[in-house]
Image (tube, rainbow, N blue to C red; front, side, top):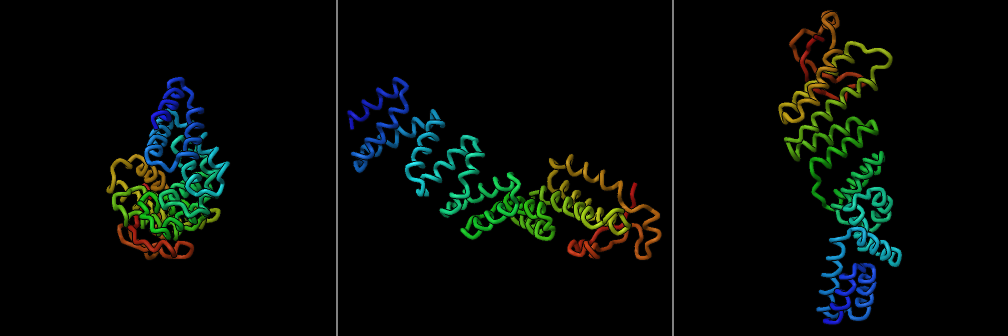
Length: 273
């Protein structure tokens, strides 16, 4: 062990990290079963990788080339790419890594990558796998799952996921904004070429959610207020309300009709400013 340390020190003192890593590999193959040698190899390798993350990536890439079926090597390389900020390379590795049943935390990370890549269906599948593996999904995970469903126009499933985020963390105000956005988007999908009175009424429910977001977390107020002001302008007019037999300003009503039946939210009749 003394001479192994001396050889390694010489390499490192002369900034020959690649030669040090190559020597470590030789040492491992010949004396890797010895406890003291294992400690030296682990310590020196950690020191090199801590100072030079790219050296770790290079080393793991070579390991992966030599052992493409090794789940441990694949996982280490994936984590090295993520820590380096090389999300593109990590995403390329993710499909093969998913076949190895990686830790639930890694699956959650892959799910978020897939969402960012514009692959909502794959993101949901990854979150489902993490859930099946017993991962404790955070509010953000449920929110991301809701966002994936929203991108696929699965409005009811998206709202269920946003509500789950609030169940996990009642202070996760972004989920209220997400639900409000769902209701506003539903109007775009259901209204056709012209907004009718009942289409406009859905914006009442959307604004209610934005207000709940502000009450929950004031830091989100600027985003929520901007949306409130936009949608208040397209509330039903005084004339819309007057000519609707069962509408009176200030009364409660339920959005549960036609294309909006899934919303089933009680709101308050009010007119555009």
